[in-house]
Length: 95
Length: 305
Image (cartoon, rainbow over all chains, first blue to last red; front, side):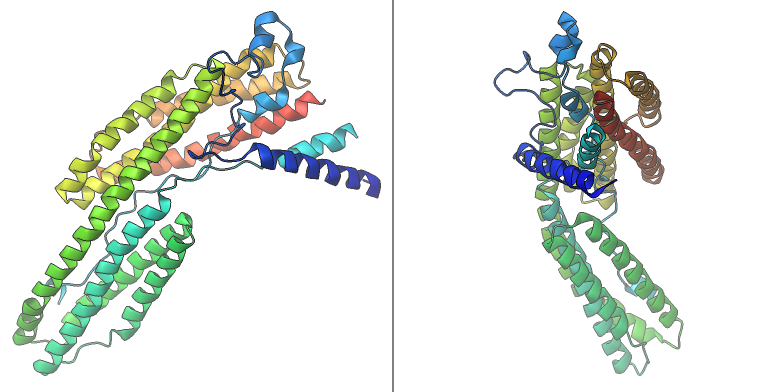
């Protein structure tokens, strides 16, 4: 990859990262805005929802792949484990 | 240039804001308080025991290095708590458990080293008030843990409801997600009785049930997403849609098997068995989660091929 191409890649990535930083602002409940692209003002009638209308009217060209792809994100952190609170403590039973 | 753009998108594939429970720090704080009660008790008990040794002409082992280790562990826990790092806090708890067990082992060993009856009587009498203090300290920590746990589960449920609403707004089938969230509501109802029992095993069971439910909710969300996305992908012009569909079909099968294998039961039965199953469900689950997330890059890549 030549220097010019690398520069273009870095520039493209920088622009997109700036865009994502604004888009992925976390709400109070921790839900990343844009993780699921449902307009808040039209629940249940999401005309922009990824491909719904495209499937209904057969206009598959209207599918926004990045919106659909964004649905494929799931948390991968380990849930709080079941480690107990107990710490061994000495007692006269042990001496 | 097209490939450079795809590359840039793939580079961004890993960028997403992971959700963190706001009550994590509160949970760690309650756990810290509880453990600090035990460390304080151990330190005072060892000093009392040394006093009994002097009174009765008996030599006892030098416990200062053990106490130092426990206090170092406490400092590590405090640091992880203050910096809100649950993973490091968990590691600190493991270290604390190991060091406290090492201390108990040393005490047992020392008990067989030329001790006499009056010495043991002295230790028995001396520990009663120390145990009372420790129990009061633990009770205060447990009340803190009760509130922290309530907030923790409430936050989890709020987060789950948000995801259900979002998927529902798209028209996806959220029945599986809703079923798991319903089990989570029941878990919240069981919280007070478990704390009221004062039995650490009952609290452990709550943790284990919560652990399982979080994994199952993620699995149900994956199924709902795949089910929703399939017709869209089928109708799309994505260059690699056959590959995407194959991966989705395979993942769906695996997730359905996973849901059967890790089926939830609010009755824990044998806690150790349930815990072992949880670990297996975690090991199996993380592979599925990673496969699910990898489909995102695949779809984006196919859009430009």
